[in-house]
Image (cartoon, rainbow, N blue to C red; front, side):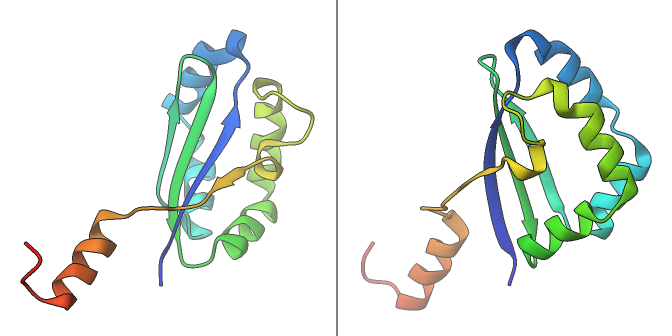
Length: 119
């Protein structure tokens, strides 16, 4: 079963433009590592206040995180990106994972299973 994971982080307001630039052309070896580690449908959204929201789908989030932590490219990427984030911990260790409270497809499937009559 695929897990949908949403998390937040905080980007320093004075680094927003450069953060966007860096993510416009992520290193190809980092992209491959993410895909090989099972990070799919991965997106980042950045608010002008510095609020960063990430979303991904994976079979096992803990395993996907561990797989990335074991790569040399992630170690380099985290070191390079650390100055962009508020707080002292590296970004991968600072995810504020949000609980999913609604998913349209899940509820549509459940409603279809209940049959018609509540329309």
